[in-house]
Length: 240
Image (cartoon, rainbow, N blue to C red; front, side):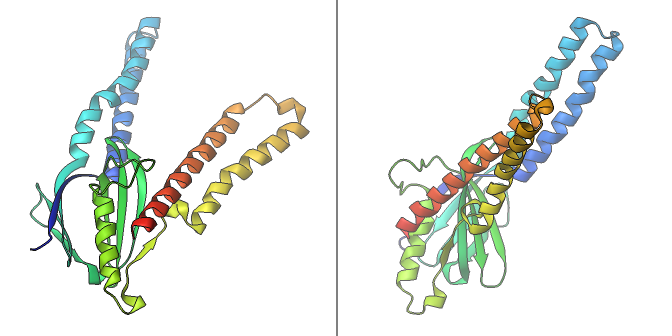
């Protein structure tokens, strides 16, 4: 088809990757306890057990990555786009006039970083593609990125629509939305309450600091995720 662009991409299945990693940890746990039990808790057996606890998931990383990534080709044209998975017989074809809205958010997984593209169709069908993509938000808009390419074609499609209801809407990701800000403030409130409790109870000021640091790290992580999600929305809004 005229003006058709085909881009090879790597898709990643994060839920499957997380599940397999948890299974690897569950396997490494009993293995780590076997050695101290067999050798009656000697220092060497405890060290070897601790090493095996971290080594088994690390060794399984390559297998997890291979099982959760798959090669595909995004074929984009003026009618829509098609996802052709090399190892799968069924391809996914979505026309622009089927789409009501879409969302893009950054992700960082076992195999690298990229973007999750969620497509919300007018028929209430949803599609999600986790695409490993090297586009750096701090650099200029990369027209080679499949995420940017899709946004550009959506912009062209919207420009041809006379009815506003037919246009495809770019929605902010969850962390960049108003709903996401409530999740962001939750750990911050927990940190404030924890500090207030410690200051009013000097006896526990230096105790149970693990909870405080865990919640503080969670708040920092959510802050970073929200910042990146807002940047993605703003940069793609410029493209569209």
